[in-house]
Image (cartoon, one colour):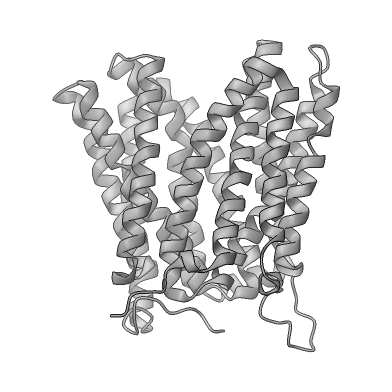
Amino acid sequence: MDEPRSIWRTRDFTLLLGGSTVNSIGDWLLELALPLYVFIETDSGLSTASVYVVRLLIGVLFGPFGGSLADRWRLRTTLVGTNLLQVAALSPLAMVSSDRIWPVYVVVVLQGLISTVNDPASFALLPRLLTDDQLVPANSAMSAGMSVARLIGAAAGGIAVGTGGLAAVAILDGTTFVVGALAAGLMSPAANRVGDNESSSEEPDSSVRAGLREIRARPTVAALIGIQSLALLGFGAFPVLFIVFVTDVLDGGGSEVGVIRACSAFGGILAAATIGKLASRYHPAQVMTAGYLMFAVVAFVFVNAPTVTTALWVYLVLFAMSGFPNVASQVGITSTAQLLCPPAVLGRLGGLMSASGALGMGIGSVAAGLLLDVLGVRVLFNGQVAVLLACGLLSAVHVVRPMRRDGLLDAGPHRRCQQ
């Protein structure tokens, strides 16, 4: 089997990867910095949590509409415009003071609205720049970039608030968005296409309703949305459960929480490189299914290992190991969605996946908070294991099996929808 052409020879992809990574650094910087500033100034857990809730609601309510705009507009221009708008949307931070916190929420709303267009545009653009067999290595590289962005952005947000306040946050964040706009602007004119309907004299229907019709007509794509939402329901519960698990079960503290979480990020970066090299051997739907099933196994061992040992190094190793199946499942589901959904609908698919995923995350986090004192952390953690196992089984039954039946797996490792 021929190896796919290296993704690094595609200039537009390297620009998309670089711009998206830097843009995500800015997103993670804000995601940590704004709630941290609100907590420092108000000493209110409710006010701090409301920052996250507002951003979550924006994604749930407006994700599909942002995706519709991404399908309607020229993609390169959209990425340039949304990055520049994100710079402008930071301006209300200049009005924030210790007795005037409300402009922070204005920034959260504006940034959330802009992201509902920016993220689907990036999702829709990637498969237009590459061939089918390049999607898994490309999404692996994007995943590694997001892991790097999370490490840098979260650290930079905390440092910026502690040393320079919101002025430093605005300067650093604005710089990342300018870089993102420059990267998008340097892409070739081919990156500025609108769907696959430009040659048609008939105006394409870019409405949310039309997108939903296209998705419903493809049961495997609808199944992908459900599987991702279920997985993110489990991941939404994870932050609370993880902190309680480390502090109460492993008798650790803040440093242990940070060190173990960092192992997952570094493991994810290494995993992304490995998955990219193995991409030509397996269809991304198979990568997704294997990822969820392996994730369930590693998570089960992690959660139940305290019956044998609470030695820190064991959990460092296990959490680093979780990076591989985590990245495999996410890269697999993203690449499969991009292969199975028509290019002209990819923006709306990306927006819908973001919205349903945000809803799952919200339900998971609320459920974890309500049930923690009733069921205990290890019971709930094992519930997350069951969710991951269910995702793997659902992937095998409702995605891989129908694709094999329709010849989409037998025809080769990659075959994009042509409808």
